[in-house]
Image 1 (tube, chains in turn purple, yellow):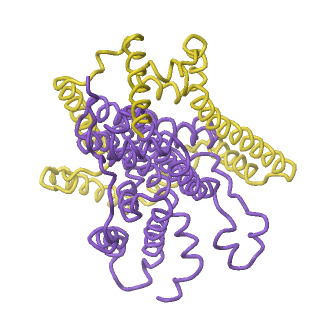
Image 2: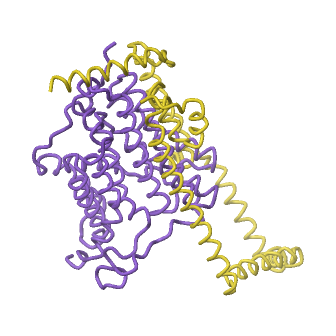
Image 3: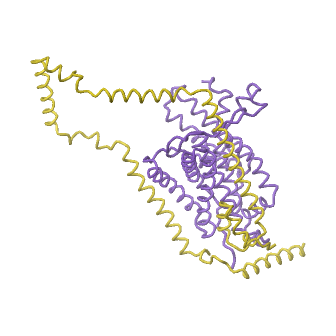
Length: 308
Length: 203
């Protein structure tokens, strides 16, 4: 039992936490701007599907990656139009997108490849990058030596997101809009525009997270590929108190839990179905009380109507 | 402090005046209860429709529960078939030479087809054995695909960020609805066309 807890467990945890990090950082931009985005799950599915289809059709995974990002942004924009411009209930609007994500990829996959559940395998996957010096150091080479470029991009996005949110005027405006939109509006900030930006960035990152699953981690789109990772990313975001560093820790915790349940299957005499529950049960335990008090942005989930 | 507040207030008033002067191009997008309800209902119904359409389609590939139901099978036909099979066996026992010619006479077989199948296997084998030069060629091709793909990916993202930064003080970003701006950022090469006639600096 204890032999499965080694450095490779952490390495696969790092890999498995990548889509969570991307989606959670995206969710952070949206929620900091005052828009609840539980559509991350649906956006990830759209990203995974479009990424796999474009990568297969063009035989180039990079085009798939880019297309997944753009489609993620556009799907998030639909959520933005419903919840920002028309002030619809943000949870209902996001649920509608999650429902769409169950149906549309399956219908399109059936139309394109005569299968509602899978797309064909992509001919070329994203390259694995070896970090020059680290890949020669024992132990470290296993932990951070060889990763797909999306993994490196996701981890690089953590300090970049922190910088954008806390050190730039864009971040200050976005946070102001999420805390007190009336005051921000009085100061001359376009509340709608800032909120649209937040939701759009969340879509771009979640779409990329979905594409990672179908282009870099796997080699095709499979139905329900995200397996609730969008919701787990939201849990990690709340666990991380809407801060990039802590959110990264939350994502890694869930990623390692996921890697653990994969490695433990068949090793201990517990039915596989129970073992597969582990990351989800951990999510519930963490959300139920381990994380302490989280301060949600004051105007999060509250639609803003500009005074006429 | 008061001076600062007054200044901020004046700035925001200036902005409002500017917007009024420019006119709001997409008035139909302004919030209204009825429109909101219609949009939400449409999204929900559309999503549910998609879900309902997919369910029976995906069911086609799975075995239906009817397939395990044995009540519809006509067992009498099956017994007849079995009887026929028994009869052939019996005839074979009676006349073994005739039965042998029926079952193992190779004269009726098309040997060309079989040869064709063999050549098919050979083609597959040749695919497996790739020369070093071909392998190198394939690796170069892959590297080229990754290189140009990476350049396009990074170039598109950076181009989008730079376009967003460049257009932030322009008429396009200030006077037009943000929905349009986000759409244009998504396809930013198109945004440069718009910037040619809405590229005037506003602040």
